[in-house]
Amino acid sequence: MLFLGIVLVVVGLILNGTKPKDNISSKDQEKDEDYVKDDDYNKDINLNSKLIYDKEVKIYIDSVNVSSDNLTIGISIKNTSNQDITIYNQDIYIDNHLVSGNIFLEVEKGKTEKDEISVYDPLIRLGNVTTVNTLEIGFCVEDINGDTLYDIEPIKVSIDDKSNTINVQGEELYNKDGIVIKYITNETDFISTNFYFYIENNTSKDLLIYSEGVTINNKNVSSNLNCDIKSGKKNLTLMMVGDTEYSGEPIESMQLKIFFLDNNEYKIIGNAILNKK
Image (cartoon, rainbow, N blue to C red; front, side):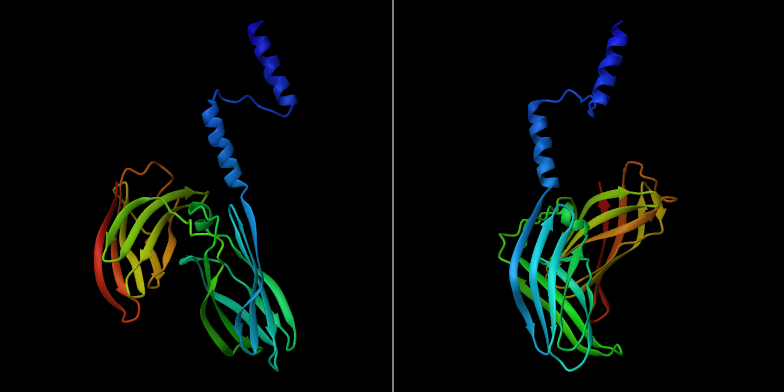
């Protein structure tokens, strides 16, 4: 009878669209509620078509939207030249952190086109991005034949949302001579595991930081870390390891042989061995 009663309770919960919950304290529930609020984070920042580039091509930043897993930048392009153009973005930085996203627009002469850059980048969730203080975007403008008309270096835009709150937590593996490297986390899917590393370049040089030789749990893997990072910038980069070499087992040890190369002079300026504990 006791077993039958338990079954009836469970069935009733299922029919009501619920499922039994673990016995958790009110404090744990508060933490869970806070997490849900963060997970649902969504904020619009209206910049009222802020003009950031003013030549024959005028570039405006219209808005920025920050959510829990995506950042969207509203762009307007006004073509006041005497020819049709195509325009696409190059590097994008959020508060000096390099992120990925792209826009490609064809704009007829005398016309204005609008679009959005969607930034689906691990930094948005792993760095808990909820505010944007500064934004930098570079652009390339071409004619209809693909010849470059303007190669626009990254333009810094002050958003003045709030103070920068990007804080990437991780295990520090290296901190010397202005270079910081942290191991953040790993995520496994059905074909590979992504190992995330956070890198800061506080030197006066543009660098290429790369590994030649990686072991995980004392086993050599063929994948290596490879990151271009400009002076004064930050990057959340990843190293992909196929499931035939690493299948998601706990990491007992990880070692990387790292080299630092001056990306302007193409000269190795240092090396190190990094060990994850």
